[in-house]
Length: 145
Image (cartoon, rainbow, N blue to C red; front, side, top):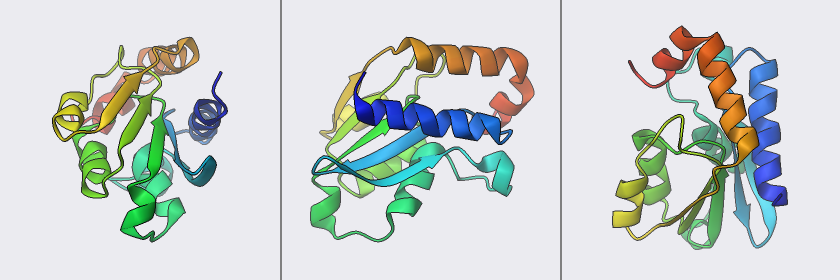
């Protein structure tokens, strides 16, 4: 498995261990992780701390030239909020662990010229399938339903 997707999965597992939603993300620039994060909505009481948003926050302020040379890895298809941030900062490539349990705004990203690769990784699918079955109320809260 790609070491960066593995790092995103480790972030997702960390979030699950903390009592949160198991979604993880890493932001990669020139072969190095510059930001990592996981969904921390439950842990922090935040309505916006999805995995991708947490990875952006962890990376801190970056010049536009850095963002435009990054790839973001996320264990789950990014929602419209996270896709908006990806588009806003000009991230050219998104690698998604899976989109079977949730289809985010991938088409929006593609229309904006972002390359989106979906792996359908079994570990990512299992993480979300199990979580949704065990904590449906928390999952539906996370996606705004």
